[in-house]
Image (cartoon, rainbow, N blue to C red; front, side):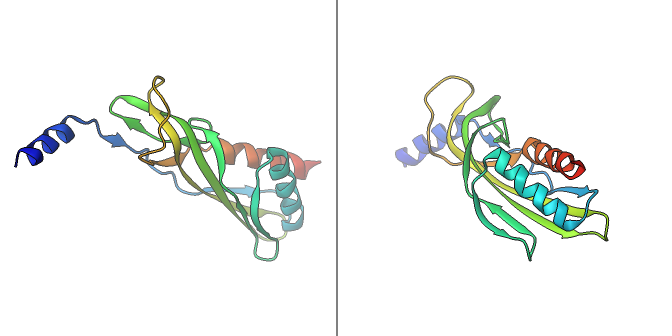
Length: 154
């Protein structure tokens, strides 16, 4: 009974982790045909040096491997109490590409992110556990598709 009371008292004082709201998948329309968009997308991913797990031109799917990035760059991992979660996140992206008529192509980017090593605020040692879910900041997706738009204009 005493042990249960102690555990309850300690957890009642802990600050909760607040996860960021996950945005919907990033969607964009590229003003070029499918073949030109696909080639430009592959070039843009190569420029980002993003490791790819799968690439299937016929089905229009590109999946990245897990990549480590600083929290705040591509991933928002929320807060613990009033302090932002900082450290490293593991991120991966899946891109879906489909023609939209003869002159444009639709691209959708889905992201999956979680903490790898984190700390509360800017002080303290990085810890691997617990693992927190993260949400995309949208920077990777916006920059990637802006690069694709530039490449299709060349």
